[in-house]
Image 1: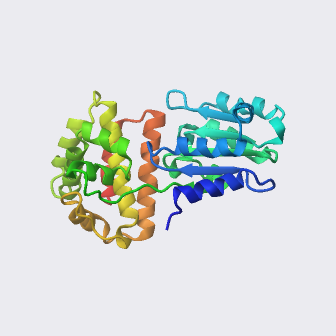
Image 2: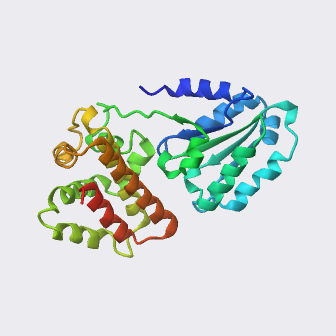
Image 3: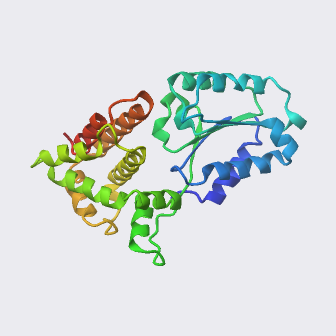
Length: 297
């Protein structure tokens, strides 16, 4: 069972004030879940005053969805300054998903050489986006989100919250981009293209041409992440009837897969999407491979 947000806040606050302990933490939660706000609240409690916060906090933010090696090297300047009132120095990487290979390796070097009383917090939308070597140096905290069906909301919002892991902002964006209808089409393709491959290529031609909007790609990756999440725990959860046909299609796709196989599929698909977003791979080809891998082909 996941810790509550309050419990995680309490544990992190304690750890950020303990010397001779791990100095690096990963806080993972889906995009739009409010993890930046949560961490800022923790940092403010640890550093007490705004003066100390200004001197002892470095918040490294992505620029155009990238965190470059120059930004990571800039951490050395921050570390070269004297700690104000001997309070902890805290560096937040937001989001660490935007680190490329060079900046990740530069950060790893800093983590290995860092002095005591200095702490790193890496915020991530997806833990698998980070290098394994970076993950191995950090204590991981996963912020829980609410996935319970709310009887006070209409079906569309409940379905969207279910797909987006309970994140209201993402759920609203999904509705605005006709994401529920898009998801139904994806389920139909997954269900039928083994018998009629043309249904897959017609879908790809319609939605993954060169002029496909950025928002539609975001919806696709959001939906794929939902499918992978459900696949990983398919045997341990009751089938959901929130999305029409989802349970039937998932049963067809995942029942015969071993845990090892499901883990491999998830890793390969997440790596494909990450490379597509960072290395400008063809979205058409990546989407095709995603469908094939989910289908076990």
